[in-house]
Image (cartoon, rainbow, N blue to C red; front, side):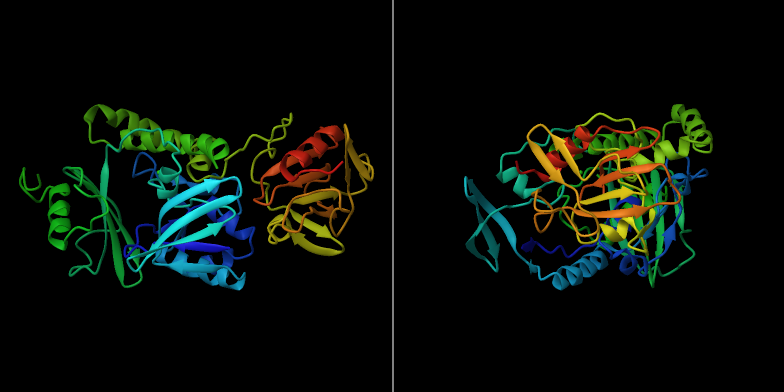
Length: 413
């Protein structure tokens, strides 16, 4: 595998959210990131005086982690090197031509173009994806209506701007403390001519002065089936926050009401979990009402083979996982659905009957979970989302397990 990256000289990202941390935990590397910065268990949602409490979220990481995007890239690059993955910095994809056998990619580096033949090409290049555009994949949505400027600053007077949110005459200024400097994010009153072009310190200072009301008027003349629904939800919340953030007197009662609502039991969870990806649910394609079905499985504390472990640790090889619990043997040794036979072994994998995972199998284990004694079985995708779950209180038929197994990991007849 090769990762092609067009390195940006700028660091725009500065936090990792709860879902990102949960996924890093399921690859066994979250501690590397948590050692790099502070964790903050609250964020501003509507009313700056009533922050949204992230501890209301059902996750092992109910906070955001303050860490620069450049440092995230460095830590990920080290991990990829451990896995034997090549990272090509300073390279840009400028063309692609797919066919039945793969994709021919044109890569530009140092002013020269060269072609590479690959089996698969994944475009992980953001909201203005070059890969998506070259592949002719549309991106329906609405144009941006608000803009922000971001700067990392060593202030001459550290006390001039307080940390956190400051309401100015024409917008807001958000100051984030970092080691040796501060990060300032402020409203840009006018759309920039080029969003990729850096602004000068003088321009930034001018916008800061205008937002804070210290300048006269006129001084300055965002995987389709699964990710689309989750993205749409995040977009809905973002647009709602943008509306609530407008400096319009008629919105003050709405902001105050939202501030009161966020303190009520359940409301903060309802707002925080989708905002930070914790409640993301993918269509499992089987019936079932269990709250884990389709969602990222909780990091259950388990005993497997006499050893204490957890869901996150079992998922670190990036393979599917099937767990059978306690003395429940209702599923038997094999799961049948039509012509499909799925041999379910214990503690070591599937006996050759399943295609999927890294090595063509599913890691299966006989586990105990004292916190959830009613669990019968749990089938997890490599990303940690629950593909099937059965309990003694709500037992699921074996054919739904076979369907889920074949849907996500394939089967042989």
